[in-house]
Image 1 (cartoon, protein in one colour):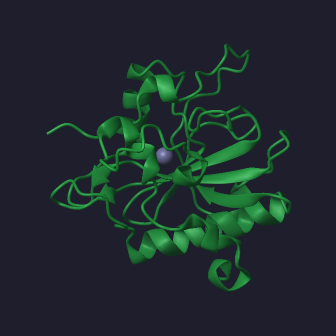
Image 2: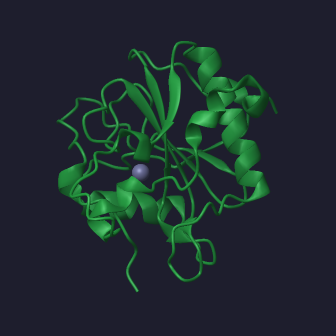
Length: 190
Ligand SMILES: [Zn+2]
């Protein structure tokens, strides 16, 4: 069974960039390692990896798959695995490749999962992932106080409106929960 992905055509391709620092993943072990982007950040965009919660999808696999899709390294800036580990992927100063039309002024955060064991979309975040996601968002909002938290699906267009979710319409569901709730202080607080 293959994993469900956004079609490459639905994601902005990253233009050639002089920086070659695509060496991630780098485990983030403290808030001080989360840096402010030199870009103006308006959005924190939350994604899921669209893999089953019973499968492992490592940061290295994520990088490999994004490279296969034609990206220069991982398209997301952060990846949170099921054990709650936060990995720095693409440097935040570089424009990401994760959401059509909104890459330039956003930071992309992806959690491992988003599908149940039957490959159905589901909020599969583990308690550790929820805690890490809250902490990461909290820190990024400290660094970028004017940013707004959204899910990928909040930025997607209703592509053909037929009510049937096909793989190429996956972004209608990503990240399988209401990410906008993170803009509420009481949710973000650790
Ligand atoms: Zn997404």
